[in-house]
Image (tube, rainbow, N blue to C red):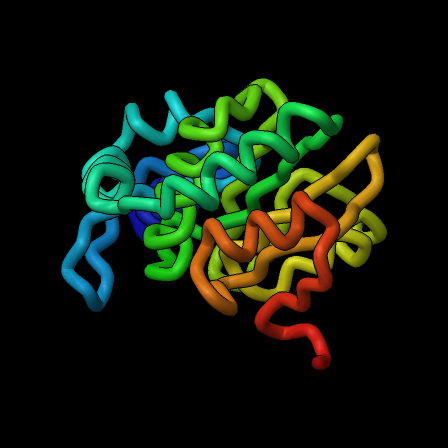
Length: 190
């Protein structure tokens, strides 16, 4: 009888353990964080539509709607984005208050600047800021230590990045990056 019980417990643990490997992209566990906002942990690359199909829709839409970027700065960003071959990668944590603040704002800036969303890559990371599904060498190159990290590429080469919070405000920081002005992110030596 004890052996049967041990086999059943072992089998249950094995099944639960293996099921966690089935979906590296999105973990559907709902978590309530210290700010009492509900979110769904998303790991790996995902689309905006996939994010909006989860509990993350609430914080995303709330922060997107309430953000009012400076129209003059948006006009300048739009000019720089249309004349250059930019790609943008956003590394964020759906668990992270900074990501939940800055990510919707960034999407609003990109939408209002007519940025081609097909040139945007969104990647969810865990609390250790580990970028999933890439090699250790690629993780070192990406150097994601704080979230959100927004990396701007021009003609395939990284030109600069925004990390965690703005120096001035998000749209002004983005303008400095896309216009080639001197810009140092929050954790870069001044």
